[in-house]
Image (tube, rainbow, N blue to C red; front, side, top):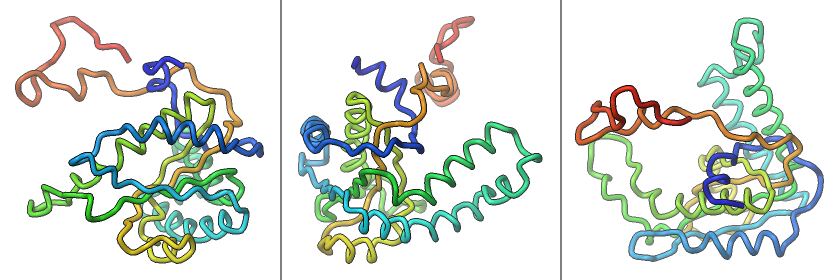
Length: 225
C-alpha cells in the first residue's frame, strides 16, 4: 500500500471481525515500526501483545470505568441519552465508541505500549503548562504501528484511557516499574468498509508561513482536503 494512501485512509476502527491476527503479520508490522525516531535513538518503547481471552477481558474491566468517566466529562453520556438533541454524526460516533469500550474484551488483539522512563526527556517539564514533549520518543513508534497495521489490512483503535490504570495494568501484564504506560491499541480485521479518504481540516487552517496566522497558500489557492 502506498504510504500517502495509508496516511489518508487509516481511520479509527471500532468494529472488528472475530478472525485472529496472524503472529507473522504482527511481527512484520513491529519490525517496520521499530525504525521510528526517538531521542538519542534510545528506542525506549516496549510492547505487550495480548491475545489471551481472560487478559483481554481484564483490560476491558480496567478500561470501562475510565471510559465512563470520560463520557461524563466530555458530554458523551448526554449524547447517548438524548440522541435527538445532537447531530446524527456525533451520535453515531459516540455510539460506536461506546460499543467499542463495552466490547473491548472481544477485540482480537491488544497492544499495550509502554516506554522506559529513563529513555524519555521532557524538555518542557519546567514550563507553566502541561508537559507534552516526552511523548516524542514513543508516539512516532505508535504511529508507525498504526500505519503498518493499515498496510496489512488491519484496523486499529488507539486510546490512552488505560494510562490512569497503569498500576493495575502493570500487575496484570507483569510490566516492570521502569516502564510507563503510553497507549493501548485494539487491533483486528475491520468489520466496516474502509473509507476512500478521511475528512480533515485543510492545510491552510493549521499551517502558517513565517508567523502564526499568515497564510501558507497563495491568494485564491485552496489546499486539498
